Amino acid sequence: MFFNEKIETMKRENLDSLVEDRIRYTIKYANENSLFYRRWFRKHKVNPNEIRTHTDLLNLPIISGKTIRENQPPLSEDFQFRSVDWNQVFTIHETSGTSGSPKTFFLTWNDWERYAEKYARAFISQDFGRGDRVVVCASYGMNVSANTMTLAASKIGMTIIPEGKCVFPLRVIINYKPTGLVGSVFKFLRLARQMFKEGMLPSELGVKRLVIGGESFAEESRSYIAEVWGCKVFNTYGSTEGTMCGECSQINGLHVPEDLVHLDVYDPRLKDFIKDGECGRIILSTLLPVGEKSGTLLLNYDTEDTTTVLSREKCACGRTHMRIFNPQREAETFWIHDSPFNRVDVERGVFQRENMEYLTGEYEAFLKGGILKEEVNLIVNLECLNEKKCNIPVVEENFLKGFLKFKPQLRKQNIEGRLKIALNFLRKKELQIYKSKGRPKRLLDKRQVRGTKTKHNEKK
Ligand SMILES: [Zn+2]
Image (cartoon, rainbow, N blue to C red):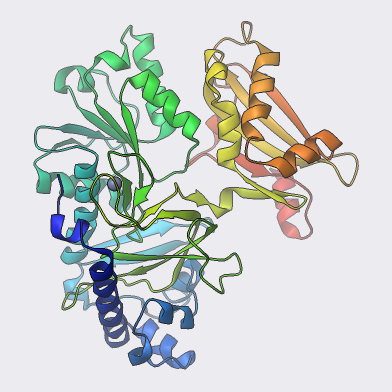
């Protein structure tokens, strides 16, 4: 089953030529309709007519969240990225980045339709359809995902229960018998715990599919949630920038809607594309169908996320659009000496199956300097189901096994004593993340670095 069979199963060569048509139109549209791009092409001596293929995009500079912020009030007199008249803007959104200053996005009704189509394709590829009832635990409001998923449901005859948050009365599940839920790893875990407490088993409530949105996670977390809920767990990668990639029934990478968003994977220096199969930075460009309009266009936009292209071959589900590995946030990647690791690696250590007999799954981790200059400490706080019954040696062994699974360099450092790993076993609600507002930061680097940032961190 497909939402848009012709597009989703298009032969590679036809898909590639459709993409190039749309690259040309999008560049032309940007030049004609956005103050930012008109100046940007001129400033970088780029003739928009010469950007004709996907490789020509390499000749354009990369733009970032910072570029957007610098080209909107208060730093600029107008919203330079806006690319339609004010009277054609349907909604205005703000996304807050790490700096806290929001980026503004303008959406026309057509942008909404395209965003919704991307989600509709993903839902159908996950076997959702007419008759399904889905609780959306993602927040409505300035974030586009929950709203556009709701619009997607109307296109495929699905019922949405727009809770907007993860904590809701269990009667919602009992009375409306949802067949699916959209949320996050920890929302699903907390909801399951709430059910256990009230004597219910999540696996007996008729939920057939869970969809995780907007975060990276370890495969171990997925399989634990799938076990607890007794159903399939799918991943989606959506954002206000308009990515919206989703896993299909095969659960073998996320399909990128290649006709609507162009995704390149760059080397760490952001100078060149890297080969499929290698990990790099996701740089995205909006693709506008010929003749259509858009409120905000992104060309060569640095998502600050990393991924690997798994395949551009036809998937067993019948779709031809490329598949990527679960993206990870660059902001959650840290270096110990010369080796990088991501928060997901820590999560892999926590969610080893045997550990889940003793842990809730909630965790937080910190990097700190050691007594010796060479020494780095990774401190991981783990929340226990019952700290008195926790088998500490078993959890420690499993954590190390999972955390170091794909990290031979870190394993070496650990053996040599340059990386010390300490686990703390805490009672319920003792983790520091419970005190923080907003999206919890589960991995913090508290090592001494030069400059004012350290002083600021120390005060905290
Ligand atoms: Zn597929």
